[in-house]
Image 1 (cartoon, rainbow, N blue to C red):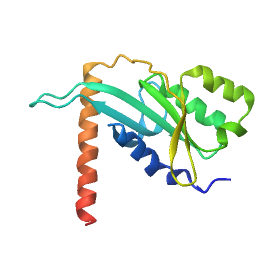
Image 2 (cartoon, rainbow, N blue to C red):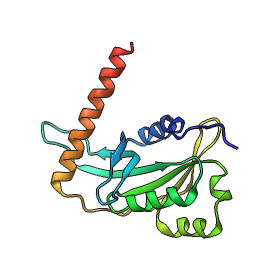
Image 3 (cartoon, helix red, strand yellow):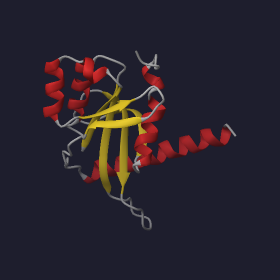
Length: 162
């Protein structure tokens, strides 16, 4: 059994994991082509030099679940239509308890597996394979604006909280 009772308790740990890897993280975002809302998306942009909007280097997604391996796999797999890499984020033991067919699907899909221990440590059980999506100029410009709004909102919340 896991120490986590609610899926949202996983979020801060996976946000930190993405941020440590240089991503700007936006929760609950609709991934183009997936038909749904993803738990966490991360954007990594080139360094901004001057006024132009920097190029988008990588766009990734993480779907979180406490259990239900097949469901989280299907969500993460559908994200591959719109992102460069997609992972599932699950507590330790969920993958091992999954049905053999589901585990085989995951291994062949390109979706990565991130496991979180009860103390919040995250390990990459299976590396997500890059899909190298072709993102058009309008998309990455919109993503940059989204990230800027999200950064400003976080800064405002931090300023208000002390």
